[in-house]
Length: 292
Image (cartoon, rainbow, N blue to C red):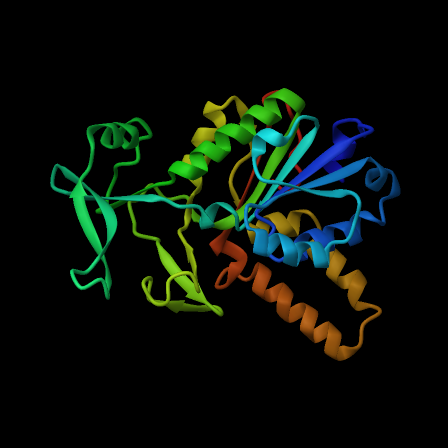
């Protein structure tokens, strides 16, 4: 809402949520935006979703004429457009390259000879793949290099739309800033870590975001990128504590305790406060900096 005001309250603004999951975030956004009538009247929402199963779940939760579903970024043909990515990029496929001395091997998945077990396999990396990771300066300390090929393509497509129509990208995700090669691939089911090969298709497989690389890619695509911040700092700067205190005045003790427990989880540096990073990119001449 503040960004919409900053760019002159355009008569139409498009919000695109990338990978909306079960639709909970979009439902909450619509509820909140309803309190800002002028903004709400200008708003259209596109949900980028390729899963028909998830789309069915989202449609049940979000019954609103302002919301449309799209499958590709190229379907967007108007703006200004704000892209919102909450735990989207960490779910995209990555390539892993294993470095041993001066040799590079690409990690593959293979079946055992009896087709009963899944295992990792290393093949010599192609020259073009090695050149890509060298050009991006991804080689540093550590043996496992993660190359987020699909995310880089998404960032390019998103940048084109922002440059054409104005707007921005706000992304929240698990990630790191350190220039370090590390294996961050993990599998989670019901909030617990699981073996990567345990019941394929029934767990969330994710990797952590290299925010330094994202910063570089977005700048390369001619966008103005604000500093990378952590979730705790971002939420405090946009007033989460003041908002919580206002809400708590009308709450029962039990509801208040529940809210502050959730607040601690979002802000505490031992929990999501520093594990989650936040990045914001806008058109090159953009000067919006709320939260950063």
